[in-house]
Image (cartoon, rainbow, N blue to C red):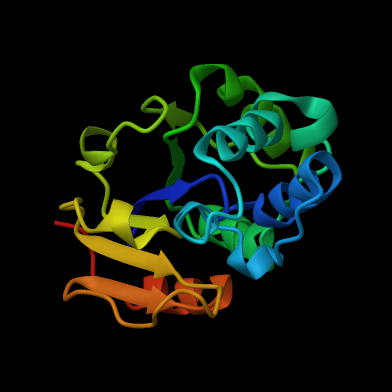
Length: 191
């Protein structure tokens, strides 16, 4: 199998922050949102939370140990598959568009999970095009972030019923990390 350069989004692709965001909304704002619906587009469109409240929750999840990274679990299957990809000889990196100060906490989270993967931070809300330009594969849970990339293979981890299963041409839909692994095994050697 060829060695591929694979980029992985951090929040909600590798680390399951939706459950944590939902718990913080419940305890901090007395607002109940099922984790499967806890995405920016939904909570703001349905006016469940204000933009300011949503940003406060994000800051707690990604920028604190006590409320965030110490309580964050991995996405189901992610750690097993990431370890398999490393064992297969692929070159992995985490590409995140969170705050710069959240990177050391994400690095610590990875270390606690037994993973040694470099993190590339592009800055809060910034595009990932430059960081992903040399990748063979990029995996993200947000379709809107994939649509702007020109990476050779794009994989949309679609875990929630709120998300549509249809993706534009050039983007592969996977509903689990195990599907992602099977797909990567079939990718021809990088040019």
